[in-house]
Length: 333
Ligand code: KG4
Ligand code: ZN
Image 1 (spheres, rainbow, N blue to C red):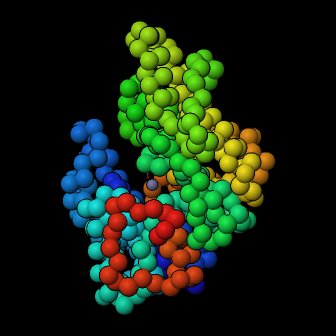
Image 2: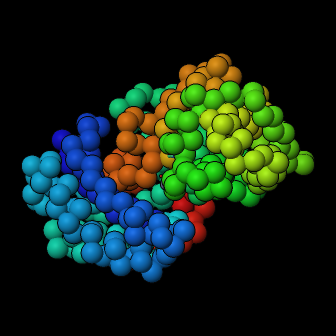
């Protein structure tokens, strides 16, 4: 059995995890920087990299301690090499390289989205080919997977990501970032049919999605309402807007599935934590739908350790001179 260390610093969370080759997560530590960025209304890259630098060794040590292991028990070091904020990625990658060099252990640089994409395959058996849906704060993408490591990008958002749309709507209705979980909760007590929003269409691109029109539609609806009305209808606005976003994703998924034969649909990324999305997808498609286990939807390092192990077993380790890449297409990496 091997212990795999994963390190993730692509955005504003400093994360380290240890996963075994038998697919058990024995430690997963995450230090969120949300509170440091909150007062600026968004992530400040300079602050993010400084915080990563402060936190990275503590987070890794905490992962080792909670797994009751020492550095010598680690067999492979996996780290997110892109896409993401360059300054943030550099902290994780340089730290991982230093450990790999001093311990003389193999290292693997991993694509953040491959981490998400493979997160539902940790401890769950899968069948190929499958359709992966990555739905997070930065991405909304359909990836067709015919065999391990073979990724074909089928469709994606042409503007905002789904999570980003939830967060922007949340901001306008007074829900703090990241708004997704609170919108999901409020929606449970709302009427999803109270407000109707259009189903977006991306002209001549049936497998792509567009969320910015829905964002405008909900903002226009809110403009027609008084403050007391907004308060009264807050839950229903959440329920109706969330349903409109998910209906768009699911309609697109069905169009893709009609063409791309798939044995399963695997949902991943921060928004995959949403139970309503999962149930809507399960109802709409004929094949089984998998989602990541608890704690594996939003950014974490266990998914990086797992994706790293999968890649390592098929293609071996990387040399120490690989670089961080702020933008990195999944299909060609
Ligand atoms: O994957 P992630 O942690 O970071 C990125 O790589 O973007 O995703 C974060 C996104 C945020 O937009 C957040 O609002 C959304 O995931 N999110 C959710 C839920 N939990 C997180 N959206 C809907 N329902 C949830 N339960
Ligand atoms: Zn992510």
